[in-house]
Amino acid sequence: MSSIGKGITAASIGKILKSKGFSVTAVKFDPYINVDAGTMNPIEHGEVFVTDDGTECDQDVGNYERFLDENLSANNYATTGQVYLSVINRERNLEYNGKCVEVVPDIPNEVIRRIKAAAKTAAADFTIVEIGGTVGEYQNMLFLEAARMMKLGNPGSVLFVLVGYLPIPATVGEMKTKPVQSACKLLNGAGIQPDFIIGRASQPIDAPRKQKISIFCNVDPKDVISAPDAASVYEVPLNFANDHLGERILLKLKIRPKKRNLKDWEDFVSSIHSSANPVKIGIVGKYFESGKFTLIDSYISVIEAVKHVAWFFKKKPEIVWLSAENYEKDTKNLKELDEYDGIIVPGGFGNRGIEGKIMAIEYCRKNKIPFLGLCLGMQLATIEFARNVCGVKSATSAEFDPKAAEPVIDLMPEQKALIKNKKMGATMRLGAYDCELTPGTRAYDAYNRKKMISERHRHRYELNNDYRQALERGGLVISGNNPQKKLAEIVELPDHPFFMAAQFHPEFKSRPQRPHPLFREFVRAAIANSKS
Ligand code: GLN
Image 1 (cartoon, helix red, strand yellow):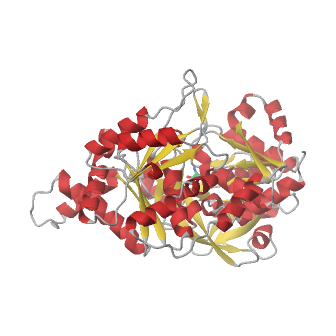
Image 2 (tube, rainbow, N blue to C red):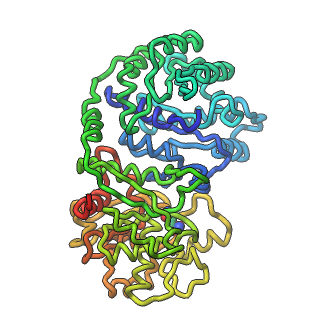
Image 3 (spheres, rainbow, N blue to C red):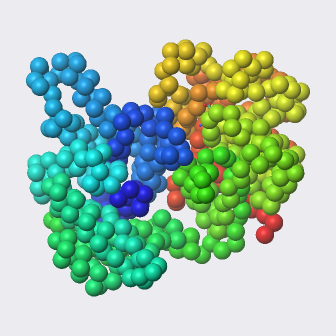
């Protein structure tokens, strides 16, 4: 079922198997026709995650990277649109030798080819495949068909996991198993019998209900695994381990574990629990309002990156959403920024909320509040500095005003051509690029005085080098540069407790047990600034 934690489930199963000494990779299939995950609205679809090779993908790939501590790539993600596109392209290249190309088996075969390619690239002992959407819907049928065919071809090495929801209606006060039973029937209808049923619920599943699910869904009660609500997603592998999921998987596949060791993960999770004093971080953004609900999925990697580093310092992360548009309505609202230990302005697109974010950055700069800008946040920090320190009063980005007189942030010529030809899918500056750090800067120290680092990008606009001198003369330090394209990557202010902004997205490379250096230094400064 959708939105109940299939991604975390897949990632957690992978983590358990990895802890038993195996190499693991994971693949996500999204049922959308969209070929590019990058063109989907983050409010509808959550964050667009980016891998080193520049693949724009679903946020679950971020979960896999964080749990498995592996770098994934284009092999680990596909949409229905991509699968069809590759079959159609192949057919048009005459690679099917004039044969009639059909939905079944050619589409499922392409899905299987992709799963095998992912396994091969990663030299994986285990490949976890997550099928997006909900069983029974038309959208993901061909992926289920691929799964069924894969089992038929490899009966001893394919296992199925159904993730189902067990509601406890307030008026009844009892955990109901019917939704899981129906989901299982629907899966059976697709020719698939689950080997495991993972029951998402607010509580662990008790013995009578495990028994019930066992009888109605035709699985051993030992293979009904509890997935109770957890204070942190990083507890989920430990919850599964309590129900011996790893051992049960290996038993079914007749494989011996190479080692048993979730110990370092247990230590990490207990450090989460023992983190008591808060560090309060405000995120000034816009992709989190949806009617009466606050959706945080749009910034999931930023949130996780803050959490990783807060726990590293044994602090409890307190993350608060601040709406940039409030500052535009009334500048008095900016005062609320004083309540935070540090402020992040994350990535984003388009005009809405821009001026409010610029005001927030100016406020942080002048009031010495630790500030971290990410991608758009870096562009806006540069614009703010140009306007208010360097006297370039009408400084802006060509993204907000294509005819801008002072495009401090502008398009590179190759991007201009792409936009003119409406080639918008997967054409931003994407994925890993080198960044050369300037010795003596805070960024250089943060990265342990490494001269060259690599970080992931996802943006179209850049700091316009025509303004570089003016900005530097005003006191902005450009501490990271891409040597090949001569582009600014990091800006910082030396006379401030912490004011740094990166054109790339450091959040994509933060891992639970290896927090990102820029987030680490930002949160260190936030803790030093702490009011609590
Ligand atoms: N909209 C900006 C650009 O395209 C920033 C993108 C981002 O924040 N990811 O350059």
